[in-house]
Amino acid sequence: MTTRTATKRTADDQPFHFNLDAVQAEADLTPFRVHWGGRRWEMRHAEELDVWKLAEDADAGDAGTVLTVLRIALGPEQWPDFKKVGMPQYKMKALFDAYKAHCGLGESGASSDS
Image 1 (cartoon, rainbow, N blue to C red):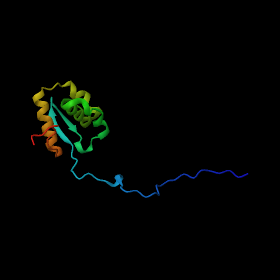
Image 2: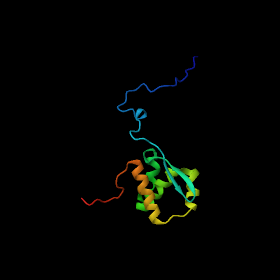
Image 3: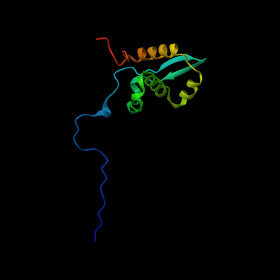
Image 4: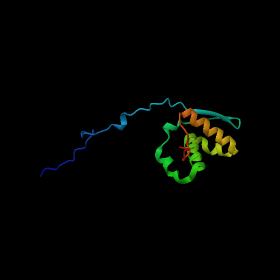
């Protein structure tokens, strides 16, 4: 009696319509660096942030969105220490506006005047 062994595919030989693996960022993904609380902080460019993590807190409102973006951009290495510094709202607004400008993002508001 002969035994059969399963053949393992090493490459996808089926046709596809779009190769997402080949997509490259159009923007320069230089990190955003900020000095705060006597220390330098480095935030990943917004275009690099994981959309699934961002979507988890999508219902958190504007403040929740800002905090989620900062948490993910700073990463688990910096975020705990960053929160310890404390931050007035006017500085948070200035920080997020500067970060959006660095990343080439437009207005983040949910509504528009048009």
